[in-house]
Picture 1 (cartoon, rainbow, N blue to C red):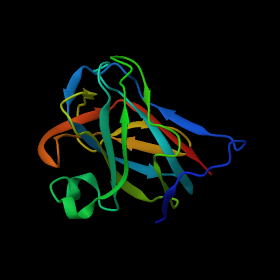
Picture 2: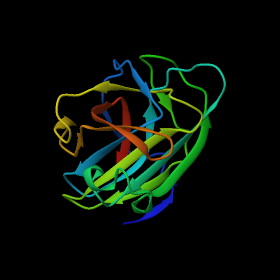
Picture 3: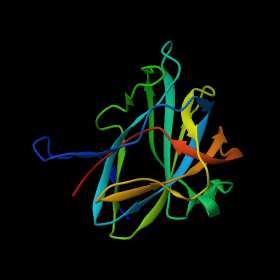
Picture 4: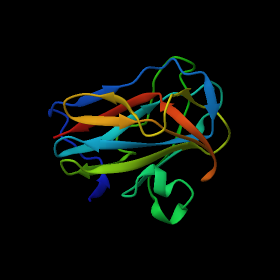
Length: 171
């Protein structure tokens, strides 16, 4: 596992897996798992924020434990980003600034959890799923699984929540 500030080559092709932005459920954050189908590096993400007013602090954590194991255990998580952004509003992607995301290298078949949260309030938007841990979105490179909604920091749990956002990665 490698963490570093994103210093990716601007000429290198970027890859994105995009979920929908049609969720309407708001909370402070969401935890979900990503499974790499081949070696790759996650370099950034776009989030779904309801608020378009004042800038909000977005924190991103990752864990080598699955969400099912790690969702109540803060000691399993490593913070890889803390940035302030102004939300784009419902149905729109809010990108995290370039270079602010701590890149995460993943091996083939590696599964890891991500926790994306808003420090100031319940402004992160996601959808309601059907079954926790079920495959939600996939492509030839990675899979995103249904997760859980969380209050800040690491509090409460709402089962079967769908990440609304984009995951950016490269090989």
